Amino acid sequence: MRAIIQRVTSADVTVNGGEPRAIGPGLVILLGVKDGDDPAVIPKLAAKCAGLRIFSDDEGKLNRSAIELGYSALVVSNFTLYGDTSRGKRPSFIRAAHGESANQAYEAFLTEIGKQGLRDVQHGEFGADMQIRLVNDGPVTIFIDTDEWK
Image (cartoon, one colour):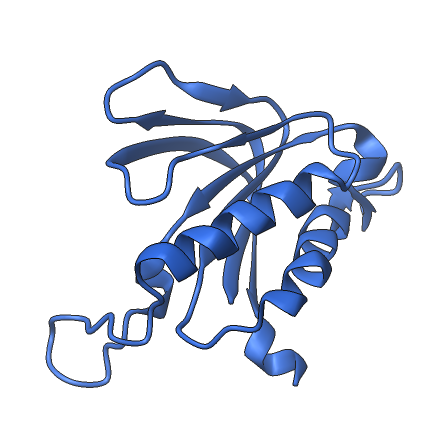
């Protein structure tokens, strides 16, 4: 699995033209699932994302987490994180998980991130047309690839 985590002052996602699902300060997490990803890694990934110490303490050091500060998270599925650009100019998404297995992993991640002690967890919908607006704070953007944990 891959996750892009952005520290934000605010963010929202609009799904299929509906009402925005918004958060104040916290994290935007774009989540990509690869064919063959082990679902056993999902709790660790959720805990890692929520517990990242990427918020400033009183001395200006990145030493506090969204959990500590009572912040929220906005989670959006994003199969394009597995776009392969090694050939040509049109990305290939052959490595991205499809259908039910990808949706199950996304839903499991939402369940696990909801257990982490964040103030609120908003989310997009798997496979939907979504627009995301965010104010990246810092900017601070972290990339996690669970394949690197092996």
